[in-house]
Image (cartoon, rainbow, N blue to C red):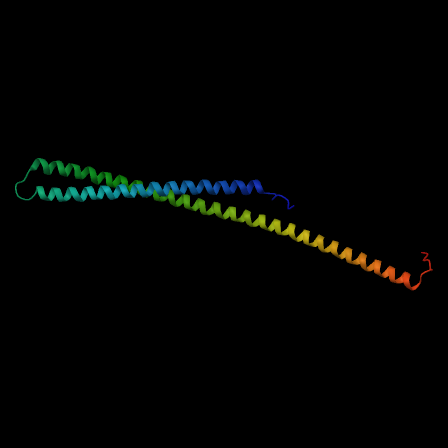
Length: 161
């Protein structure tokens, strides 16, 4: 039975770290996508308000509606600016999380490779031990066969050493 990898605890820790970072990166990607969608919604609202403002400026001018639309347009613009800042912040966080995830995966892969190398060393040692045992068996069999041949040639001779 192969021995347990000597750094198995480190490998397990690195694996759980990769999983945690994958979840965090996915969460940030989801938040980023939501922020982008919200920005698109604000852009649609702005475009709609601009069309509405254009229609108020044609024909009979309703200054109250024009003023109200401009005020709302300024609020939408400020909201878009804040949303863009949030998107930029989330992009930076997502990029940092991606870098950390890549580094963690590389660290885990290094430990996996070390584990495989340790297993290969164990397998090589077992193969070498098995070959030595086979060699010992073949040598023993050859020695027994030699001794048997010697006894058949000279049946009543005793060897004194």
